[in-house]
Image (tube, rainbow, N blue to C red):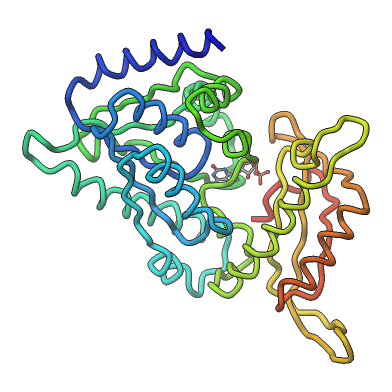
Length: 331
Ligand code: XMP
């Protein structure tokens, strides 16, 4: 609508006035906020923007390629893709403690991003002068003290605070005044696909916290395929009363890999394979959440597809725990 077009025009003017002819770096994760920030800044300054996409190898099926297709392919933005899968898997080898895993993934992410950014900063007049971040209004409020009131850290989050100073860059945050809904509307108005802009949240450490215990490539590959089936069927199944898909009726849904084996039977043979758990929740703020009462027909379809299509998984379970006392993610 025209209000959003006005908003875009104003934001574009503001970015141009702020940045002038200087270069900007942005860390693209594939998430909603960094994607919308990238699309907006690209609209404003085109090739003065370079996006750095660190692929830690713990993304969902085909996610890295989809990010590249969208930003490099369709928007023609400059994107540097850093394939760091081997590096991350190497650092995670032998580590099974959830907090230790989170710290390794978060820390390594910052290290890799800084290395790439440093190459773009340089010293000459042509080096980047700005670091753009997809900070939105709720993040601004949260860092203003609400977080520090919490006495216990349940889970340490991916946090990229302090990067601009460390890199000697000025901070550009064009979404700072917007709520999540507004960011999504802006994304659609900028031409990003609604399925991308209205995606469920995905944690920074990615599949690293959805593979219980030690992370292995074999596990990540099985999990990616199982999870893609679950999400595909959530998007296929519609609730008759509302006409909405079960993807839209849930706030977050995903698959968890359990590194235990159980016995099964397939054809006239015995199997001894891994187990996955499906998790789907409904929540308004992610602080508390109810497990979703998915239709049995949907669960049945997902279970039979995963077991038939993903060799290596022979059992599918459904997580019926609410938050609290369970958390949404399993680690
Ligand atoms: P929990 O598991 O604590 O999750 O109930 C609440 C919400 O936070 C997401 N989450 C994260 N998001 N970085 C993020 O950006 C993280 O490290 C992280 N850990 C959990 C989780 O997916 C859920 O939406």
